[in-house]
Image (cartoon, rainbow, N blue to C red):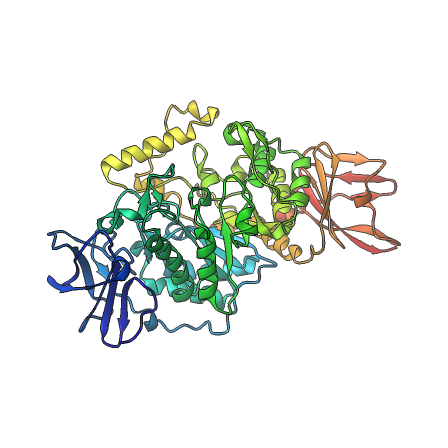
Length: 598
């Protein structure tokens, strides 16, 4: 008999379709096809396996357990064409003809990440429609796409973080081969693709894992999103396999270039080998000689995920929070412990996280771990992401919350800084579309989700004045208004030019970065041959310049290389920077200086 590729799920082999499922809590399992039961054979470890001759690609099936009248979808289903409550469908991953044979993976030294939600990235909300926009992303200077979760979930729309079928790409975006075609097209445009995966919980509607065994979950740990996954308790071996093999599956069968691991602080494991180490190892093994990139979200900023567990990078929420205070002046809720001051950005440029164990008043506890030893590229920084745009009254983009000059200056600081920058969909052309929280659930669950969302936003005192007048997550109008209008790319050429030129300039900002505070609202980042000055306040004139970072290289002088005040970016116009004996730094602006011979 032909061997299987993965230990669970339905796989096409020479003799037909091999079905294998983990159900250690039961004595009998059969696969049901067209109303007929095909008994599976019990194997060691609680597995059941069997081959059905005559089954093939697109065969619909379900599992029956212990001769119960009810039947259930496959926990490792590769496709749920009618949603999580419907039949599972056999998929032939070998039917797609890949064209990316020369693709060797991503270059982790110069990544520019772009977070996107397939359902709102285009009006159509499909993989095929998204392909049409890839050339524009490449031309902007982006080289890595981060796809928000696509695990199958209930309803017509959602963010994807309430997925219940981790192996099945959501049917509302297209078929599994449509997803493959998207990745293939991205590689043709020299764009890598990583997938945001949710391994810390499963959604509340459509999850049938406990029908096969309750051992998928544990009450040993508290999880704010639902039941914790059992990675270290009774029968945890099968659970660990389920998730680690899932990571390998996405890398192998969809040619993905890595993963983004959601909310890793809620993945609890006291095993000798942490499950995150296992997941990362299996993903890299599946990639073979190809280079992949694994980044984690981790609210407490635990550097051990990089040092000990093998991740490449972590999100840096500190950078976003400081930038939002700098942009808006507001210090409330989780922005309380930030000032938006140049010193914060200088410290983060040189030492990584801003909080590395200091007391954090918002949480009334210490936060963070030492990160100064990390390469700057191992921290991902951003001005916008799905959570942070949505965590406002109306899901507004940053350009509507600050003035244009400060917006351009902060954009320059992000894209020319030493960390790996990330943009959120539409940011590169100044999209006016909001990004709100949306989830299409059944009535009772929808009401509970809306209540929870409202209470979450009310942590911001300024939002309490709305008296709960927030967009309803289950209203299709909430979802529809979040869709991007790519025609705005032509309508906002100054924003496109700003991002395109900064990302081109970024390729010249090489070497060790040094940083300094120049004035109350002014900072400087110095590379080998480039000097970036960012002024978040009003114009300053300096008759004396007692800062070594502003000294030009020996026998050379500075000249202006780039300014965010250029009219091409919507700025007011460029003024001279260094005159005889005086430096003039324009307000709400960023400038880049080059050395030239005297």
